Length: 379
Image (tube, rainbow, N blue to C red):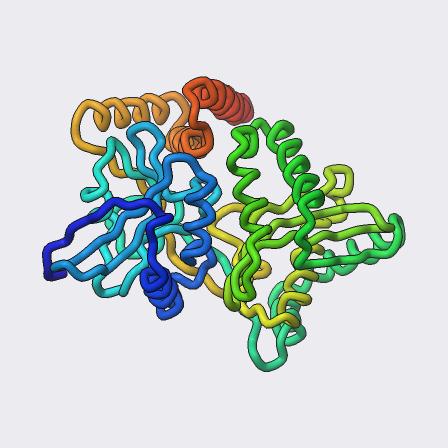
């Protein structure tokens, strides 16, 4: 790409009305940037809540070619609101915006880390995000008929589970688009219980992450926002999900369900009904995020490539990081090393105190080694 690339660091609060319009115009013009995470509203709200947030403005020969909102955690540079930010990248014209490597080099820092980069990138680990696309003609019914034909046994099982759940617990009711702070608090507590049960880092323990969800839900705008969906059985909550939406994109974000009802797959039922009701409201792309559970493949007919990468500044830090990863690989294999790295990225992004990071790191290491020991014992 021709032209000298330069960078200016500013606060997200400094964006002018013209710059905000340019940002959202670029995002709207590029299908790869259709996720709500690329909207200027998400960056501005996250910048007010997430500590040490800032904005990188990239220019080529003096003309703005990209915006990248980020946060610092010690010497590390992470996407703004990480680990709550599922997709990230430079917002700008595709032919002109910086690549991952260029952005990392100009931003500096001891480490530049991303988990769901959308855009040009060399190196890193490639992955896929999964989406359900509802056809304009036929809507939800046409989509569901096609999925049921492709995966008949799976969806017949879910239909049977729904009838059984209604028979056992009472009438099923689903509401979407709810903006009740009390419901959101209940969902967050369900997620925190899940983290404790599974030994994963509690992303809500630090405080600002819960504040972010509340701030997004409180934001009033016709084509951007966040809300809660709820499945009730016999009048009692069985499953909930917090989602982010913009334009025609609906992003499933934080699901939770009552553990005692796991046999009924209440989360799957809630997702299916959310898609049905959401399609009636005009949403066409339902985003399940990248990687994760295999059930997504039964629902999704569209994939988008994303990249997970960590770029280290040359020197002692890079050498130590490489040595640590090598030691973990020897101890438990590459899978264990990757697991610990991902867990550390989450901890580092959440926790702004040294004590919080140390506590989280100790739990992550114990959990990873315990799982590895279980695999060794079974081998």
